[in-house]
Length: 271
Image (cartoon, rainbow, N blue to C red; front, side, top):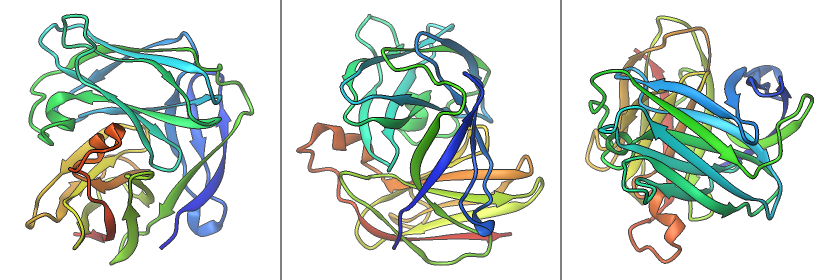
């Protein structure tokens, strides 16, 4: 098992997050939107983009508010706040304003460093249903209370490197780090299958492209094991996998009995 620390350089004041690995075999180039304090990002989800992953840097003790507001009143949004090592700190479905919009309100950051925001839908995150978006849905995402992301900011987070053809690579999910981040490089037009197997817990897989677009989700493909099968990669570049427990969202409750966690194996094959 491993959880590898990578130092990354943030490029652009509020545009792109560029990630390079620390060795030749880890030559990754993941480009995420980096959110600045007080900035509002306009974005779109669709049947091909089930969610978006963003990044920001914050300081321990800062209280941040993250708001996801949809243009369509019928669009049921969902927010998840994640840590640099796969921690899950806050989730919100309906923000309490009488709408289906989401808001993580005045969350106190537990450490200084990098955080990720997953903006998606109730059907994708709560129901693991990748067929819930039958049209394009516009939304706005705003963060307040975090330090601005400046040029030449160094960020750190943890991931495991994968190569297409790897089989039965070991990982883990626990209460402090429910999500294991994996990176791999692929080519446009490649058909790949990601398989996650565990004897300890009910598994869940997310696959993102290099811009943070959530391309595919799978819960149960074979019993409680997961498989994202035959996905055609849309571009050359780096891809991101979340490998986790089905009940990862409930670890924020602290005493939830739904989350199990444990060890797993992940495989990445070309079809």
